[in-house]
Length: 301
Ligand SMILES: Nc1ncnc2c1ncn2[C@@H]1O[C@H](COP(=O)(O)OP(=O)(O)OP(=O)(O)O)[C@@H](O)[C@H]1O
Image (cartoon, rainbow, N blue to C red; front, side, top):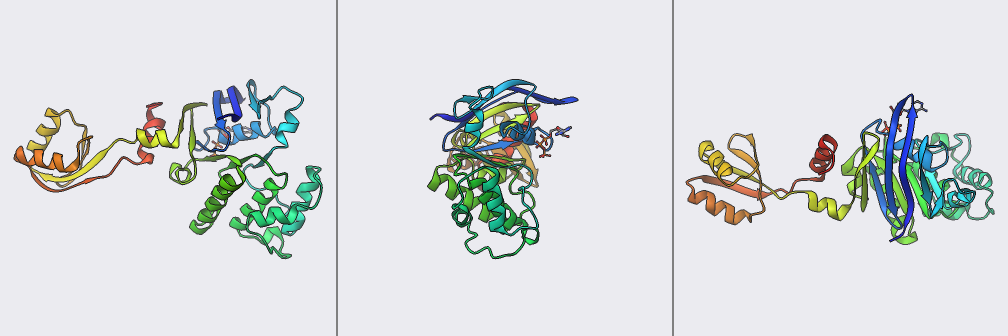
C-alpha cells in the first residue's frame, strides 16, 4: 500500500523541544490514529503537515511530493484539515461558510451543497454558524474540509467537547467518508478508546517521537490473553502462579487476574487438582487501554 504522508525525523521546538525526530507513514486508505498525551505535540505535527508551520529539521512528503518541492502546494490541494477548531465565520450560515471556503481555495463554485449533503447538512437553513451546536459545527467544518474533494483529511482532536451522540455521528461520518469515498484520515486524540472505534493504523507519539507505529490488527494481537478468577485459598493460589511462572494480580477478596494462554476450562481443572476452590473463571482479554498505558509508561513493547 502506498503512503499518502511520510514524515522523516521532524524536529520542532518552541524554546523547549516538542518534536524530536518524529517519523511516521500514513498508508493510503487508512484511518490513522495519532495518539499521545496532552502536550505531546500532536497539534504541532498537524500544523506542520498543513503548512501552517515549518519544521526546524527533518522533512515530510505528501502524495510522494517532498515538502521542499515547489509542487507541495499542489499536493496540499488534495488535503483538507480541521486544526483545533473548525475555522468558521460565526456570522455566516452554513452554505455561505462553505462558499467562502471554496473562494479561499480558488475552487470552481457549484459543489457547496454537495459538500453539505456529504456531512448530513442537507437543509441547513439560514441559522448562523455561531448559533450551531458543537456537533453541527464539526459537521460544517468537515463540509468545508471536503469542498476541494480531498484524498486526505487531518482532524485534530475532532471529538473534543462532543456529547456521546455527537461522537457517534461524527464517527459514522468519518467511517462513511473513508469507506465510500476512499478518503485517508489522520485523526489525533489522547483517548485511545475513542480512536479504537475508528482507526485501522496507529502512531503513538511520546517524548517527541513516534515510539510505536502499528496496525489495529497487530495492536489487538499485542493485547495479552488474561483470565479473571474467583478462588481460594490465597497461599495455594500464589504458590500455583509462582510454580507455573504466571503473572498475576490480586483484585480483591479471592479475586485474581492472571496472564495465561491456557483455555479457562483446563486451568480450572488444574487448579482444582491442586486443591484450590474455584468459584468462577472468565476470559477478559487485556484491553487496548492497558496496552496503551504500557506503551506510554515504558516505550515500545
Ligand atoms: N505556538 C506555540 N508557542 C509556544 N509553545 C507552543 C506553541 N504551540 C505549542 N506549544 C507547546 O508545545 C507543546 C506541544 O503542544 P501541542 O499543542 O502540539 O500538543 P498536543 O499533543 O496537541 O496537546 P493537546 O492534546 O493538549 O492539544 C506544548 O507544551 C505547548 O505548550
